[in-house]
Length: 345
Image 1 (cartoon, rainbow, N blue to C red):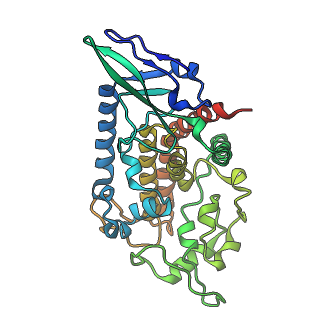
Image 2: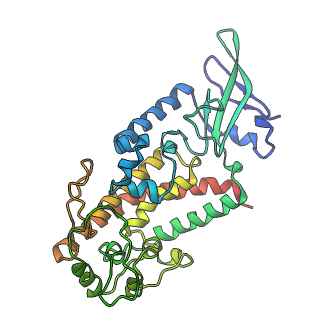
């Protein structure tokens, strides 16, 4: 048996044999912060309001509308996560949620532990007591190793200087199609029309080498465009080339938060989503697509990177995003470190 006790005015709950799981060191739980049910539900409702303001109707599962939205179709479809995750609450590692019961749909099931073994005395009446927490020791070994790789990637990226001269050319490289091409026409990844001609796209791609550093953008290049990138990127070399000025590297902070959830807090998950939507808006504005006026919840006037003025505008917005993403990247690394502390040999 193990014991968790919290001295609070008027009560002293006792918990024993937490789910009977011998992997969970109960002494550690006694050192964690505890939130009353009123406290954590208030925090949960605050995060729900925040995510509702950010996503609006797109959180309700209206898939057809989201599919044609140039920001949210990328966020929801490319990252392939269930929207209900954004409505579930987790405080991250190190916090116990009092009064939380298994089966509560507002809490995650994956990676969460629940205890129903305690009792508390309230006003002379004995009641069953419950707690729940994000338990890192429930992660499978394969998951742990995958999260360790991600933590190392995040750290390697943070340590590099930002490169701010790519100008979002990856979107153009995806649509590159010279007249003498021996390949099939490249696929359009948006249902939007183009704001410029194919000739203008080709000329911009051919004007100078492309300096993309993000593998998950490079791998979608049209076949004729891959050789025009300065570096031939691979998954294996991603830690070498990924750098913090890249829009997609900052957009991926949301992906890496999804991957760690529920061992990362809902607040940080939502902070990373906010950065991702900002990055995606810049991304689509700098693309060859005609996005202005396509939706009413984002300002998507074009950033014409085929001009000197457009490139200067892109670089300014890219630098602002990089600076705003730094504290989120650092907090995410801290969350990964907190998780991996429980799996060090």
